Length: 164
Image (cartoon, rainbow, N blue to C red; front, side, top):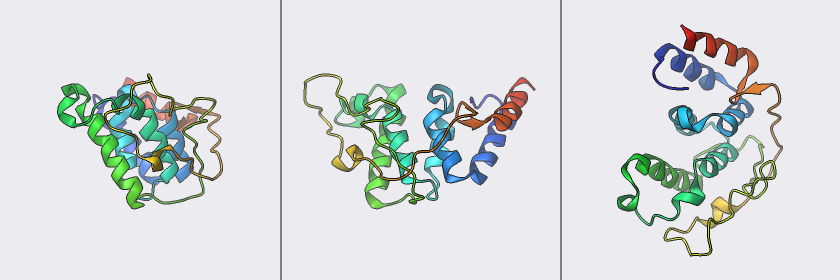
């Protein structure tokens, strides 16, 4: 989901703007973050996005990895925007920025992945805030029949735009 194809990116922005909270949650959990981080950020900048989606994005973006850096100055330049986004997610999450649509997410059990497991025994220079370690109670979102976090029909239209 690269910005190389402006029509395709605009199509996805339009889709995400009108998507249900569950569709946005699926996108956040299943998007390719290597190429779609800007669109994940787009979803996170909308306060109607569910808080469970924000928590999922936080962990998928690599909160466990980035906690090794105590400040932005320590983060290698290409990774600094992600470190800063993680801090913004923490601030917004603690402030109640996102909506509660009844969607659940557990960072210790996300399809049998425990995002909170440390990458070593050394204490982190930047500890993950306790609130980011707690599960959001609610229902799980069925993401069957999706591709890269998009309903199949949306993914097909998006793929066609990428091909030009």
